[in-house]
Image (cartoon, rainbow, N blue to C red; front, top):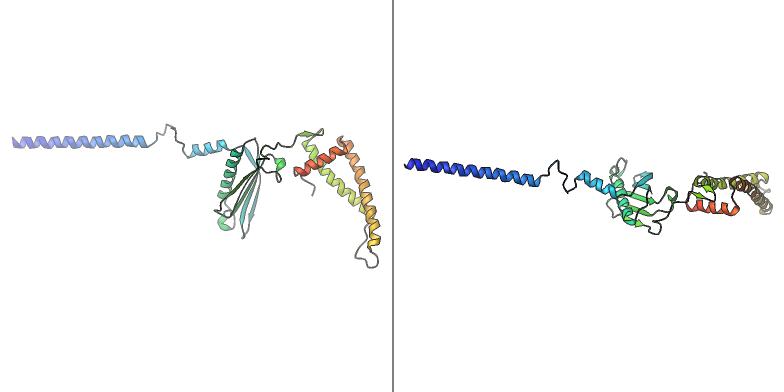
Amino acid sequence: MKRTQNTELKQTDRIKLLRMVLLGIVATVFLMAMILPNPGDSGNDLGLAELAEDVSSVLPSYRIVEEIPYDAPIKTQIEYEVVLEESTDAANIQILLEHLLDLGIKRRGYSYHGGRPTHIFAYVYPSEEHTGANWIGMVSQIGRGATPRFEINKELLNLPPPDEWGFGLSLDQRKELFREVFILENTARIQAEATYPSLNPMSPGYYSSEKAMPIIIKQRNEQIRIENKLQEELFQRYEISENDLNDIVLEGIKNNWPQPQ
């Protein structure tokens, strides 16, 4: 009788132990299900890919028009010239500048300073016509790990691109006219000096300021005459006035249009 009771107790203990093990397994599975995400369930949390996509979605559309590297023992530098392709606000310009700074920090492949930039600069312009002159945002980091400096020019933030048409001419036509003005002035100077050659100041007994001054005056008058003649041809060809030409030249200087080399 006693042996039967002991046997029953041992069986009861084994059943209790088995139940505890099963409960432990069930609890573990439940906790794992709560902690680990379901591969098929996107959920509310962003993974790395989704986070990157979320960050890129707030970046304004932009284009890097020029990268200017500098690699030497004294410093390794990268400079970005960036043009916006859509209008935006100061907050998004700040996000873009931080993004460009990150691009510079991750840049590799240099010969000095461990192959990484020590100096990073990025300039954001409202259009390609404003590059080199009217930036609306810039970031600089001078020294690896240094605190970056951000600047946003709010006065120029809404600066419109140059008019596509003006004075009855397209933007490309005005740029070409701007270029021709410099060629015209150079041509007039060369022709004037050919008509009235300058004295050689190295010729002893031949050169003097008294002799040179009349020639310089003649050269200048001849240059003005040739410039006026060539400008008249421009007025007729482009169908513009002298005031129009002066305004176009000022537009080119303001917007840093390319000049002939």
